[in-house]
Amino acid sequence: MLETSCPVQQSRTYLTDLVFPPDTNHHNTIFGGKVMAYVDKIACIAAMRHCRKPVVTVSSDSFDFLAPIKTGEAINLEAYVTWTHRTSMEVFVKVESENLLTGTKQMTARAYLTMIALDDQGKPTLVPSVIPETEEEKLQHEKAKERYELRRKRKAEV
Image 1 (cartoon, rainbow, N blue to C red):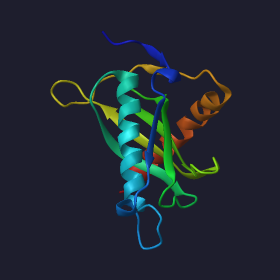
Image 2 (image 1 turned 90 degrees about the vertical axis):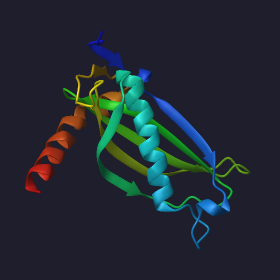
Image 3 (image 1 turned 135 degrees about the vertical axis):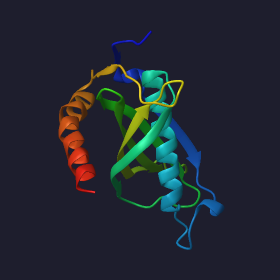
């Protein structure tokens, strides 16, 4: 049975990992593609927690790299569903670095991904709406419709 709505908190997901030399480029900073893979994975988990169904990524937009993450630092990710449509969910992912010796944290990337829920036949299926509770969640939810319309417009232009 499909729940009609779920609080953002149900989808909130965290992931922390240590950046090792094989994860980095010749600048001793993590590969952008590695960060993107982490972002896609955590967005998938957050979306599945929201709808309790398999999901696939249909778009990634506003992927902004803000600062590098260096070898030996931790990469911390946080993701949650900000908004839903009929079968799609917008997921916000925030990435930060953490110097484990000093405790200094820095925002390093942020992204919005759109995930689609799938039924047993691999077809798009309905998802519950999302209930924002905190001020940050309410702000993200408020601006999500505008981001949705921009994605639709961009898709129509292709």
